[in-house]
Length: 124
Image 1 (cartoon, rainbow, N blue to C red):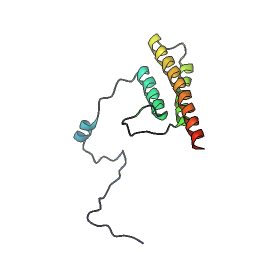
Image 2 (image 1 turned 120 degrees about the vertical axis):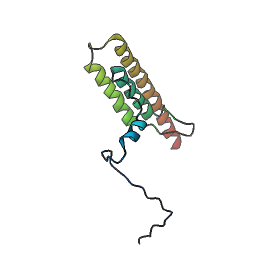
Image 3 (image 1 turned 135 degrees about the vertical axis):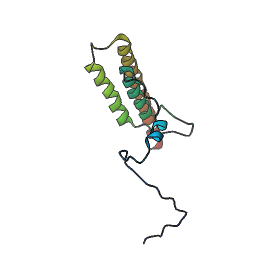
Image 4 (image 1 turned 60 degrees about the vertical axis):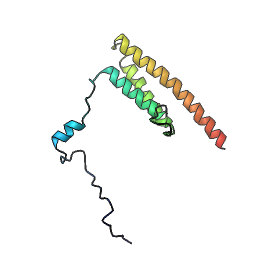
């Protein structure tokens, strides 16, 4: 059975990113300046992604996301692949950033995995 829509019901229009209905001046105001493309930015982006997937990055006290260990492992594995493929081609600071990020994330992954296993054992 269909309900008639009342005047108070909001209408939401969904559009595609390719829709050009927003004028260009408004688009310019909404854009944040992008950081320069660099190896460090790539590593830090992947690291932040993995930290969010591990549930380590929260935006409020109530915000408690369950860790997604499968996605976190994938992100960490991507960084490991990046390390292997760039071996011998990185500057010292880039290599250290990648190595330190991987070491930290792998350690955190083990910690979070243990916490998830303990929580699951307590529920049963």
